[in-house]
Every structure is written in C-alpha cells, then in structure tokens.
Length: 273
Image (cartoon, rainbow, N blue to C red; front, side, top):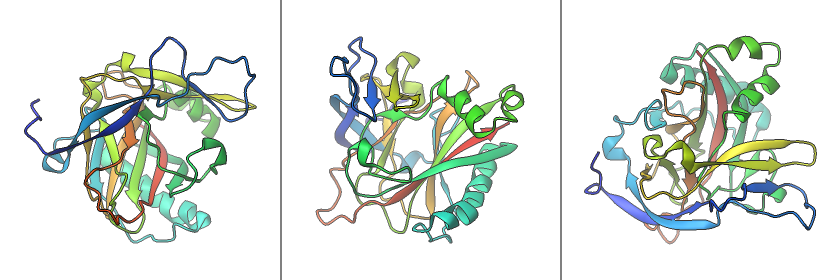
C-alpha cells in the first residue's frame, strides 16, 4: 500500500523503550530498590495520515479500526447513571450492528477531560488524554476480564470467538486538539507489542505498549464531530484477524491556537460471536 502521497501531519508518538526490562507502572510507591521501566520514554516523530480519504477501506479485522456514524441524541455525559442506563444500550446496538456479534457487554467507560496526567490522581471514570502508544488488552488480560465480568458464563463464552471493541466519540463538539491516532495493525508485528504490567496494591493487570518501528503506519480522522464514532479493536481471540490495535492521542500541529479543549468518551465492550 502506497500512502506517502496522501495528506499527513508530523507529530510525536510516545513509544516505550525495549531495553530488556519489562515496562510497568505502579499505582503505589514501590520499594526503592525496584528497577523501573516506565512507558512512553522513547518518543519518535512520525507521519500520521488523514484517514478520511480512505474511510471505507479500513476494517476492524484488518487494520483494527473503523469510523462509523452514531446516534448523537444522548447528551447527559455529566450523569453517570444516565450514561449506564441510556447510553450503554445505544453502544451495545452500535457494536452489534457493525461487528455482527451475537452478544455485547459494556463493562466500563472513561470520559477524557483536561486534568492531571498523573495516573495516581485519576478517577475510575474521568481521566486526561493518553499520549502513549498502547492497547488495552493482552492474550492474558482479555480472557481474565471476561471471567471477572461474566464469571458464570465465561467458560462457555471463551470456547468461541471473543473480541473487545472500544467506542470512542467526542462529547458535544468537534475535536480541535489531541485527536486519536491509530496504528494500522498490519504494520505492527506482535514483537512490537510489549506487555506492561499495571501494579496495584491488591492485583496486577496487563496492557500492551508499543516499541518503535519505522514500519508503523498511523492514521487519524481530523475534526471528528459527535455524530461520528471510532470502533477500536483492543482484543481478539481469532489469530487470523487484527489483534490488539495500538493507539494514542497526539498533539496535532494543525490545531488552531484557540482550539477548544477536547472532551470525549470511550466505552469498552466485549463482543461474543
């Protein structure tokens, strides 16, 4: 695929250094003797291509993402109860319609607004933009999450295909700053995905962070509006399909000087086929 003649911006993506030390992040103060390898310590300037001219070419099973129109009637994003009662069912139908899943479960959501970038200061629901090349689940943490959310059904569900999809959309207005960039999953080998442990006082989780490769192809959709939503593949049990697709917010050099602060919601779902 030749894309260099297409429109792009150049910006920094924060990769993670592959130095032989497993990357990790602590949500508490570790022992002073602990050897740390925090994520995002290997920034690289990359080309991020405008996805709009190729919007109909992207596939969840190939590149790992798609952009689709979405019902924009819900506006109560400051009401957590309403989000779960009214918005979650909209997301379930949206994911079913565009993936063909038989069953979809929403298991949480995050609203991105400007605040402290320190993970320790974040709440479960409200967090800042994440400027880190990452993906949310690994071959271990995906099935583990199914067992946590659906303990009674997990063994049976995990016998068939399971995929996780994040639905990402602006809240009320067009995105003018810190849009989301997606790394075409066909351009990233599995070795580019480093397992990062998330250390909590009572448990340890896993996500992927990306090490740099010049083969990576990044795309974004500038000036997304609330009537549009991204579907992002974050886990896949079928090895013949796109797996856990890397993504990151980034600083768009074309953002206006007086750009409106980006506000968005990301809803996490698990889909069963």
